[in-house]
Image (cartoon, rainbow, N blue to C red; front, side):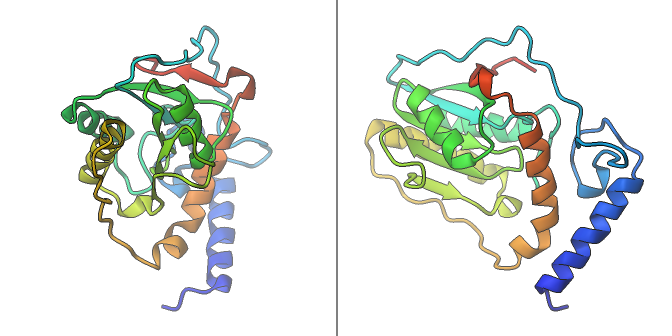
Amino acid sequence: MEINEQLIQAITKAVVEQLKAGETQSAPVETAPAAAKLAGKTRMRPKRSYVGAVKAAQGTNPKEIVIGVGAAFQTEITKTIGGIPLDEVLRNVKAGIEEEGMVSRVVKVMDTSDVGFMALQSAKLSGSGIGIGIQSKGTTVIHQKDLYPLSNLELFPQAPLMNLDTYRKIGRNAAKYVKGEKVTPIECTNDPMVRAKFQVKAALMHIVETEQLEPELGMIEWEGGR
């Protein structure tokens, strides 16, 4: 089947119509058809309260790598766009960091859903100056505090093709940047059709994430915050 703009538009229309007729209003986003009913609604998900959340502090440990996750991470969204549980994603990234002798801290980024800025803000907060940004759909960036937002260290854009080993290697590479060691770029599977196949689902997941933003909170501590 040829994937073209007309087909993508048709798929988008079909998904939106299914959402309007859907019945699941509170389940986490795992597939596009599972999104909340939109008829008469202005939001995909109810707004989550973060009353009592602790604002993320500036790190001082030179071995620390801050992992900044999206606003819907582990709450409204529990799996990546490829179906990997976010708990496992986080566990493997942290394991990779620890295997290289570094330490990790997890924060939830509440003022942006752009993974580049999430990673950069995490790097600036980190005691080492190295940070990792992970969108809830799985897209990941390794960043350094003194770089421009789009001049990251490593970008992993094709989340549907990533696996747990990839996330573990991301943690290892981030730690190697801290130590000043030679870093070998992580080999990733590439599929030019992924964007067309997952475009609608990615857009819906991004909307859910963006709806949960609370810019006044900035970044909050998330370790054990679920």
